[in-house]
Image (cartoon, rainbow, N blue to C red; front, side, top):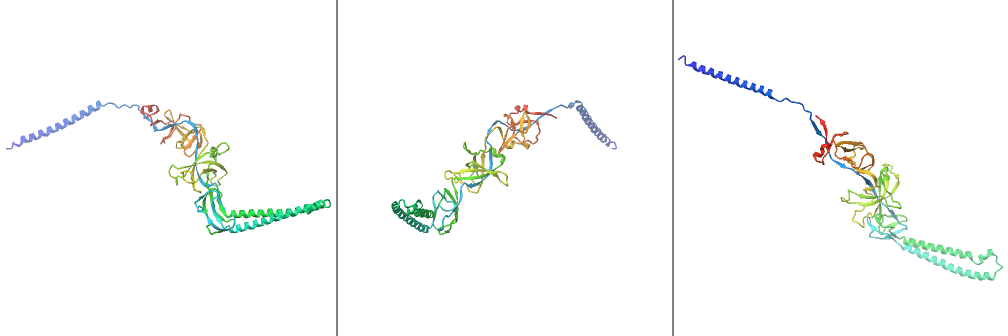
Length: 410
């Protein structure tokens, strides 16, 4: 019985030895595999490579030509004719035209007001009677002169030349003639005063304000209303002095620069009025140091068109078309970079140029020297700007860009 456990112990040790041998075999196989892998791995070699890199840009091709610059300035609307209508006689207003209201329009010669004419009619009647009396006295004196000539003929030779005019009553005749002339002038003055009781429009006008009504008592020189002419308005615009040479003022041979008026705050989009430059005012504004230019607008109230009417004392945009500038390149001001430089793409690289800017208006710059027709101006804003950096255009095929790519070594 004591020998039974021995076989079991033997089998147990055999299993342990087998397990150890298997583990050692696995470890040996793994080590051998590692050695084989290390011996057969390819050797890394450094190769010189190049990477193509260039900024992607858009360009425009420029051409020379003749262009008319456009100045955009603000202008103040003013009437070309502006009067304060005053009374030329005294009296009470007894009649008023229905059109004589603020905002009403009247034609030249239209009756606006009537002042009570009774006193002036009486004065005219008195002056006419005085004239008739003076004319009658003149006829009587002429009859007396005829008698005097007959008497002088009987006394011929006994009257010297000094007394001859007295005998013929020449001084008396001249005195009565003077009285007749004074009476005629008095009648004319009375007629004028009577006509002035009818206050009429001096020109085609719009009534801006009215100071009297029916029943008002007015004295000589009292203000009755403010009238502005409706045939033409002025726009007083301020222009930089350096820009005056590009404006055309009218002379015997032509008209002034055409002007387009806009009022984006009031008028519908796209609505505009047409005008023209008329005169340059010979002084500069003391505050802004800008020159003042007078622009004329016909039919400002748009009575004959569908355009919007102009309102006195409002501000409008005046787009003035200047004289032609010949043999220049016109570029958008957005393409004029810092320090008045222009980016040009040449042979696939950036060429930074500083051309001569002849003139600038609100949207464009007009360039004389420094750029050539056919140059490709870069319109894209670059993050990195340096002379000679590589560029390639977005509007060409990839294979066409191969000649426009710079190479840099890694």
